[in-house]
Image 1 (cartoon, rainbow, N blue to C red):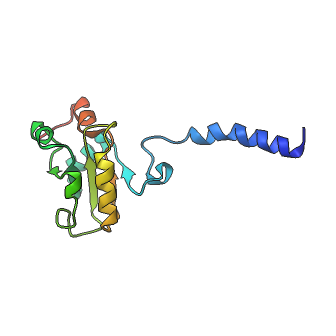
Image 2: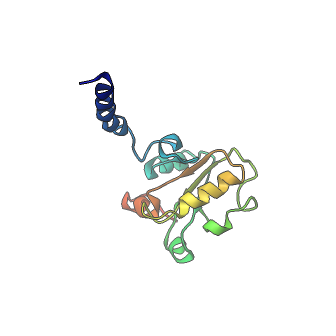
Image 3: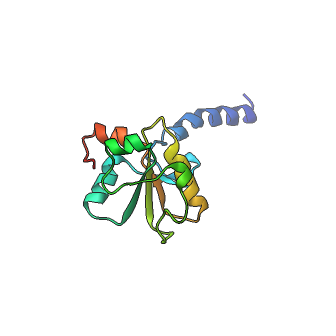
Length: 138
């Protein structure tokens, strides 16, 4: 086997090993996203500790009315503007939508980043994941 063939073989074997370390809990860097991710349980803990967090529910009116994460402000994706967000562009913003198959929170987070916000997170589990863990709703 030539030196080149051995290097190619080793490189191919290493690919799956490198991919094993990625998970949905990883930050933006591993996903190619500018925002970070937070689990429902971690968000609940931060809210219980009264951490300064701004939470935004990107679901429709009806779903928001059925129940939402405590303190969450209803904010549809097309309504993400500087006027709707806190003045402090370093504040922690968390966006969520229905669940892992929904991408509204991704789009809302991207809009916040485009407005200059630097501490932007999504809760990919959404309200479905929140409720499945029997976390409190308003």
